Image 1 (cartoon, protein in one colour):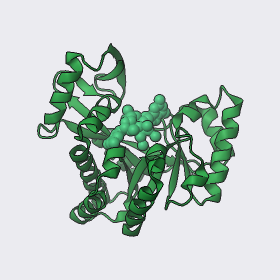
Image 2 (cartoon, protein in one colour):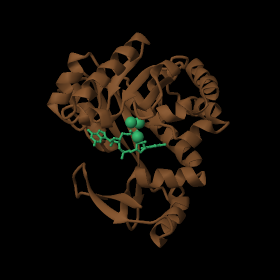
Image 3 (cartoon, helix red, strand yellow):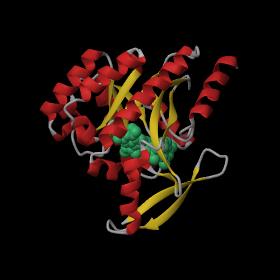
Length: 285
Ligand code: C2E
Ligand code: CA
Ligand code: CA
Ligand code: CA
């Protein structure tokens, strides 16, 4: 199996990719799994924040919290490598709780600093979504951080949502009653239809970046995206396009009235310091 590693590109907010061949039984992956067990207590996790912007005004409407693991020897390990390990071992539960807490604390810090309130979105893995105490955990964190629930957004993938739609409906109804926002992530990859999702109390639909990146090379994809936007709109959802990298992609998404965009064209995931400086610069001009 090939796995991708990030190594920090000195002083800059992007990463160089190192491709390393790993089979599931290699000592590397085993030791990675082992060090993951201590990563929380060793304080090796950090969150990056990727702004998302209103497609018309280009103002920041929210941030997505993206987890990074700073491994003492390997540097930054990509979530695509360690999240599956954490999911398999169950470590995703305490790690995911740390992410939720951290994101709420940070959002409150930004609000207390006087920045315009915005939502911070947190990704929930399938196992995390299915843990019996999720609703309780979210409620406890909102209480402890004193964050207004409308500024917390939870992202679950389309695949997670449709796995057991009755269970999903009951959890999402509890979360909605609490006042948090719910997004369907990676929409279009799960081979479900939006009609199946219409029973769920959803707020946002995030169009997967694999569609957006094929927009300019495949005519059919433009039609698919337009269909998703129209249908999402008719269900009263906010449409967010992920992975927007090119002006042509942005122009098309504008022409079909997508609401928000997230992608390297505007911002890459930012450290807390970079995100704070960005917001300060928006206020001070
Ligand atoms: P995702 O939720 O779909 O997050 C978006 C990913 O796309 C992020 O990768 C982001 O850096 C990347 N991205 C954003 N804009 C662009 C763009 O314009 N072009 C390209 N090529 N990529 C872009 P990242 O940070 O490596 O995260 C990968 C995945 O790991 C996430 O996909 C999510 O599924 C998972 N993940 C990240 N943080 C967490 C977390 O705290 N908890 C859980 N359960 N999963 C997480
Ligand atoms: Ca996401
Ligand atoms: Ca996504
Ligand atoms: Ca994804």
